[in-house]
Length: 402
Image (tube, rainbow, N blue to C red):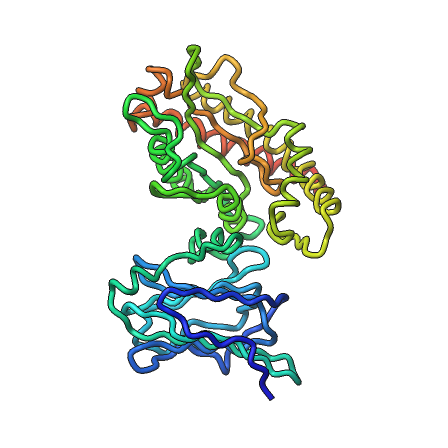
């Protein structure tokens, strides 16, 4: 006997969420993505119900299903995909506690039906999603990431995230170009902080990837706004080892110029645990550590324990960046290493620094930030710093293991 949990008829681009929990395994022998007339049918047989979300995205056109959480072991694209109306299919872990399936659509399609049934005797679940072909304008109007808090952050993450690295995998560096979209940051002489930091971030990411020993992930690669929580989610999904937030402020008074590097002050770290516990899902606070069901005090203690390692690592990273920039000939502020109550540095599970690479209120800094050739020493200095820091951290890890 089947108990109907949810069957909804949607407009194109609608979204659906469910409120179950725990890990579910896919029965590959019964699951399939197949053609259904001029549309598609996605049928997933699961070992138990889990929360899920379904929505469409444009450019390129795709259907996204987010789950908490599905175990995809044993599933293969070739076995699941049997459709001409879908050009590709991929699935896998999104971040700890979450997984994702993405179906690339061969034509604009809207979701017409979605629902999950559960067999009461066994607890087995069956998720069915149906799509039909619609016109391109209708698809574009209905497509978009969910706006619900908590889910919207997941939609910003690249849906083709690589498998987690092994112990000897590349160092993952998340580059966070400050501001963006509706938040332009500082502005001077027709230049916007958001634009300059994006250009620097892209150049830095390219240089990091060319090393062959490090992998860069950008929190944004265009002029759009990314909420703070989403930046942290992107970093965790990528398995970040280091997080670099790039900024260039402007002061109304004074002649400040040159680069400085910030880490989280002790006072901010103490208060950050409480704020993070209040504002975030327990399962999103620490990569690989499920805090579901724990109270704020326990969550705070666990985050403070994590900071015992990542806090000093962040301090060492800041020192390395200062040294790297100095060696590359980049002008530094008179006090290049600083601490601050900066929300973007709150994450306890990876080393984080904020690099104030210059001041838009300084004519010299502004000129240096506006040209690729004068940004090049900044890039060289940061890359060299990351390499030196990674070598030092690896040496420390070996000593700890001995």
